[in-house]
Image (cartoon, rainbow, N blue to C red; front, side, top):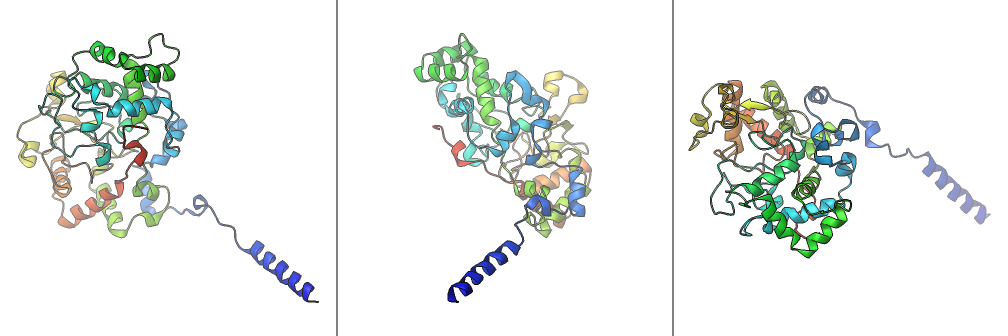
Length: 362
């Protein structure tokens, strides 16, 4: 009798467990709020970057990348590990004093937090070093857009006389060919090349590593349907961001980085930023009068951490940068409440990369 009672108790327990509702995946419970629906017109989360909608510049230099694996798999393949090693190697500068990481420090969100950066020559450049994190999502590289992708960009500072100061591609390649470890690594990554250690392969590898730097922010989680990822102040800031026209230049997955725009549509930028010099932007390359003061619009991802702001690093505080942008680009005097709310929203774009990327050895 006792055995039957015990058996019934067990069966009852099992029955109750089976009657419990199964855990429903988050994707099945998402309900888009009105603000989410509106935001979908202007922004896309990191999770949206997939093989079906790879930006054209991901295909440059025969560097195919499975973007889905980049986003959801933080392991590095051999090419990416080689790129990481090169990224941190100070031998990529003439005097061995700086690496890519010196100006684009991955410990500090891909920047050095300096108005302009100190090069191998102990001289400073004339423009602020933008973050390398998310840079692969931009339609062009540098403030003047002179490089088409992160692969091409990786090779330019190395040959810049103020930055890495390497006198020529051959100079650096001869140096690397004299390093047995690099001979083995390049041969492993580019086995079909008669001479694997080349400048094109060097920049190709660095670019492959940089394409891994796509962390997920709270705003991404909110765009993916988790309404609790943002608080009410941050949502108010997003509304102000949209309503004040900031989305004209700062939208898409990168929240910027997709167009060239004049800095100072409604005034001389240097009168507001107090810049020490006046930078003509892409006019210096094209000599077209209409290109004066035209710069690539920066991504606002991690903007909380990538101070100081603008092409010359002339503004230290994010609140001041927002106020200046409101006046210069939309001709609006933003209220203190609007500025504070927008800054709160911008802080939801902060996302750090995996710790394994923040070291030279891997």
